[in-house]
Length: 257
Image 1: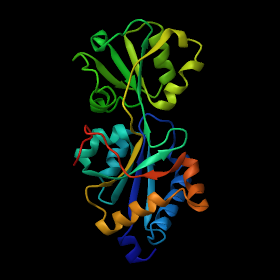
Image 2: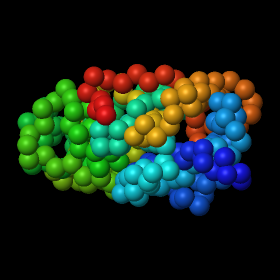
Image 3: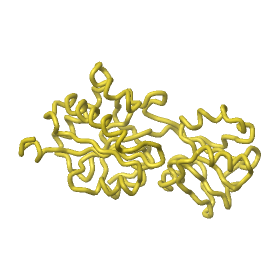
Image 4: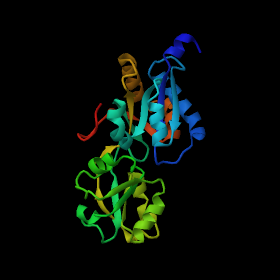
């Protein structure tokens, strides 16, 4: 790699807390995506690198490194850390089977929860539980949750739903894919969807702390919006379950740097 190319290398950090996946398995797919994104944007080959971290703490550590210019993160992560990391959204991910926006669903024991006050003393479990501001003010903005409600992160959604069915003081906030699988559970009759969020972005690609020059950010945004409309970029997107990207459409509660 030339000195000039090394000096202009930008790193994109994928971080998806709560969702399964290992860095070693993901890396070849991320390399393919980074190469396709650079090509679609008219950037030099090798000028965009991508790395993955499945944890909030690990993702934050990578995003705080000076060489990291871009974040590809779920919307709850964006809400939690946009101000801290000075994240400026470039595009929203258009996901297969979901689209660019999704609704989150709060599930409780059938007959137990009829309104926000019914959740007093409860714990809300979710893959997005690491982002309590998202849970309270994004997914459940229509409900003023009691102050004693605890919000906790879990990647074990099936176990959490079993706890709900067993009558524990627990509710589970599900993303759209998880909610779609509820009816297939053998104990589905014990569960009830009690409130659903408005449509919210699924995931965001954002510039971190103004570390990408404006001209390059614009070129990358233009290139990302083109991806998915040709065979080459579609092949790079499909393993990541991406159709492509759309312009950001953030709700009014979204944090800004």
